Length: 346
Image (cartoon, rainbow, N blue to C red; front, side):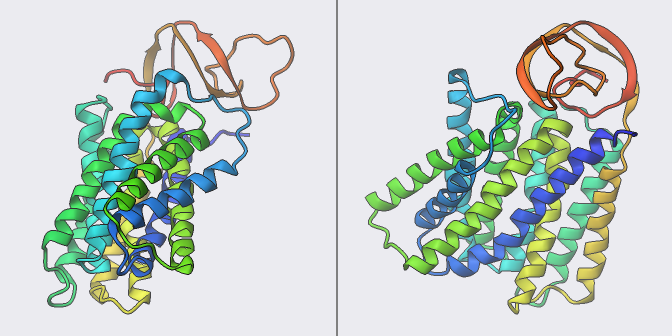
């Protein structure tokens, strides 16, 4: 049976992550109306942490003590600063505009992945990202009069996207660890920080129904979405995952429109087509050339049918598993993505 292209597999995971996040953004605005931003952020990550605590962790590489500094940084950026900025901004701008401004996370992620992680981008990725950003910009510019006014709320949402983009790139090396543990650690740290500050600032506590609703949004839009995002990063890197994730705001805008917010009428269809074109360019990308693998020793989940893991075991390996193993130097040609084994130069 022919194996699917690695970029298509990782792209499908990134798209699923976008669906989970995009569908909950307008719900967070609706349930969080009148709720202080620190409390909202804390409840979102309580939900994410609880969701992750229930997941099966077989065959995954656990977090290590040396990962602690990176986990703390991404928790501060992605589980404290970003959701607080988003919650504050959502209360001060249109749900449609907020959903579409979240497109900027993809742009910031691609640029930071190229500048910091030196991930190869290429014309196809840039074209796909351009289509998706153009779709988002079109909806904002063509929405009903007054809907696209920018202000402090929009600026706060933009700041949230920049913090999440930095989180995506800095935390990309954690993608080889157990995603449930990463989300649990990140969610617990973010919830503790946000709720601790909320308590210190005497923010009022919402009703039990509102608190449970926000926690549910956190379980789906932050817990499930981040787990899928990390698995996508494991296969296709930070830049491509971030670019495909730009589909999230379009679904968010669709959900927001169901609550009666303006979307721009027929322009929504045009913008959606641009977004779909960008996603299609990603999912059909094929990257293949002769490349060199240097000697590498590491620990991550793997199988023995991918052409890169031919080490011996005392007995036959039982499907996906994780342990410390060594890769010998090899030169070959096959379709690949910028995963942990293919971060070579071009």
